[in-house]
Amino acid sequence: MSGRGCPHRSEWTTQAGGEWRCNRCGTRRFLAYGALRPPGLPCAVTSVGRDPGEVEWAAALRWASWRGLVAHALPGAG
Image (cartoon, rainbow, N blue to C red):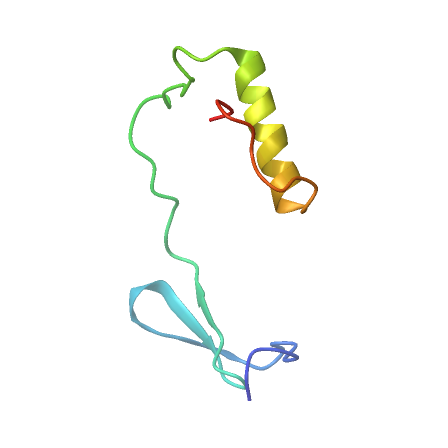
């Protein structure tokens, strides 16, 4: 049985490395780990040297092209 539709109410078997497995469907859970994060605070990522209005237009044109609202992007839109 796949994990889809299984309520996981049966027993869980402990495996090596902090892995637990549902005895009914075989779904695995990993409970003995933490998120990997480098030490210190994250760096801010910013766009350098671009006009904010240009970025807004490029994003709007990209969104419109995904929606099929424009046939092509305007020249210089990025």
